[in-house]
Length: 285
Image 1 (cartoon, rainbow, N blue to C red):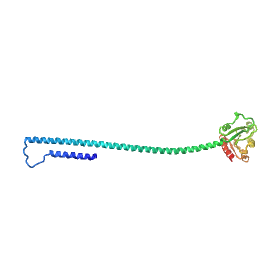
Image 2 (cartoon, one colour):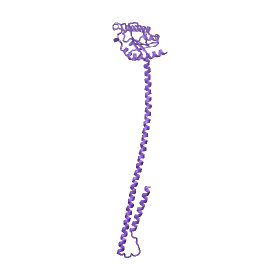
Image 3 (cartoon, helix red, strand yellow):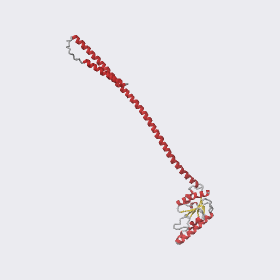
Image 4 (tube, rainbow, N blue to C red):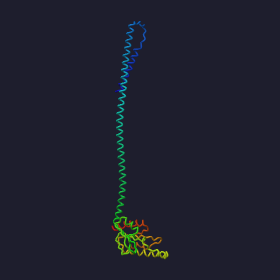
């Protein structure tokens, strides 16, 4: 609407200028001009001046209207652009908010799924650990150090002290100087902290004789334990025979159903724990 109005106003302004120019330009004539009188020239000049003034006034008014229309159009366009910009900005912000919300929800969903999976795996592992520890909590262990003299608290082997902290149902060290009675699920015979051969014997005997003496004493100690071992109990022999192979241990398969041997403290702890699982399953049969 504003553009049409500007176009019509411009045409009107140009039309009036053309009329003014046409009137101000004298037309050529073939007839001789009459000699004007001084009074007539003055009147004609006044009328032409008045006409020019009126035309100039109309021209100024038209030009002013044209400028006003141009300004109004700029204002209108500015308002339109401002409204359009505001609407676009609003829609963009809404879209941006929706996009951010969608991304946030997707990230939270992925994160929750990932965390749930990891937590689930950790819970399963923890459950397995707790189940294994629950088995140990139902198993008792008897620890035998087969020395002839009474055993004092200060004489307890370090391996036994570690075993007592492992979390078994009960851990006892038996006094081998008296008649022992094994009532646990796992029995440990310690032939490492007990000297099978004294220092004096090692200094006086040959290596072959020492080997035979070790074989004999191991067999005697194992026999004593087997006589006191319950039917459903696992036997663990803790021994360091060196290069020598102990026949008494190899023959245990003929005398006891489940047994094991260990030669280091770490190996001993792991073997006792494994034996506890065997004893637990055996007792449930």
